[in-house]
Image 1 (tube, rainbow, N blue to C red):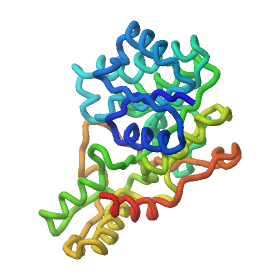
Image 2 (cartoon, rainbow, N blue to C red):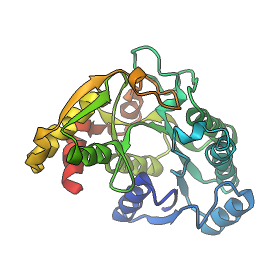
Image 3 (tube, rainbow, N blue to C red):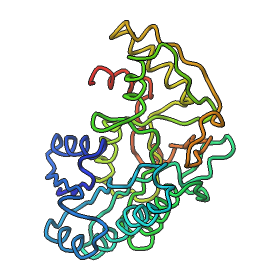
Length: 287
């Protein structure tokens, strides 16, 4: 199977390439230098030249707060919505499957019950809105698609919450972290395995894929330092206090409820991801 991965320099793209090669698939990775997804002509030409069986579309504008700046909104829309539409149209033309990586931010983040894949979408911020527009573009242009929503991502490549905490823990004995946003972290290594499983099958539709178990950002931080101290005792001195989101005003409104139901994975023969604590344990030993 020949698979084209966009956003290959990101946390997920990096792990996906490794997983595809490990399973003997032909993996072709592109980033903005090789294929600017906002350029419809280039997308058409490059994808047709590669002629993949599957496109796993990871490329996105992910700077959530910067997306709120007025001058950035057209750029975010061009990447997350138009870029996704450009890819979806070519995939349809060459009868190629598409896996689109989306986000919990397509929901309004209210309530306490886990979001189901087919729940009403009502984004809170520009990033969420543009990813929602991307979902619509995929659904309107293709039949052979997977929309996979993830949250709280961490991997070897790039920046993430775990790396931020570990860096802060080197210079601070005490940290405050928000405790009123609840969700599940997603380890790109585990997610990659699931995405390749999907690419190999035809159980199309919308899915949620995060590691098992729930936590707030505060609980996530506590567990990071607890496990990090097992490797480097210096982290044992870091204490963390819970605070509310109001004390950390950010440009983009964040969902307080990022719980996502993953029953659909099991119903369609896919394996759920391991617990986030287990993923964290493995990840800390990788980095």
